[in-house]
Length: 79
Image 1 (spheres, rainbow, N blue to C red):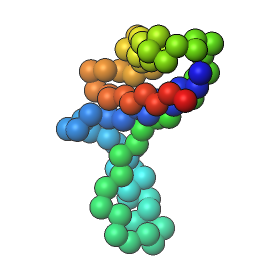
Image 2: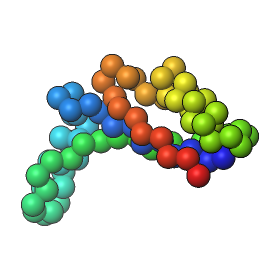
Image 3: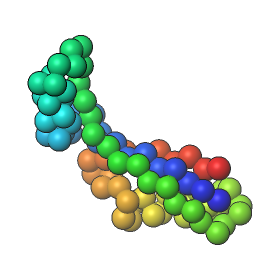
Image 4: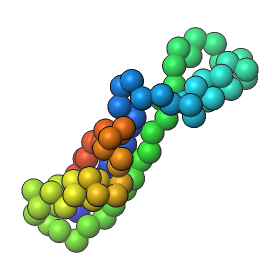
């Protein structure tokens, strides 16, 4: 089973990399960019075929390593 994991900063957490990208886009002439938030994307292929077990395993991976749950949210999509 394949998992797609999107990790984003929680609302209210400062995002200096996003701000730098926002400024650079303006400098390059891309008008109308109101804000940029930076995140991470992971694809993990697991051997588990039971969807609920796979989701629980991926959730544990996110909680223990992939996401810093103090400042980040994560979303799991299984296929």
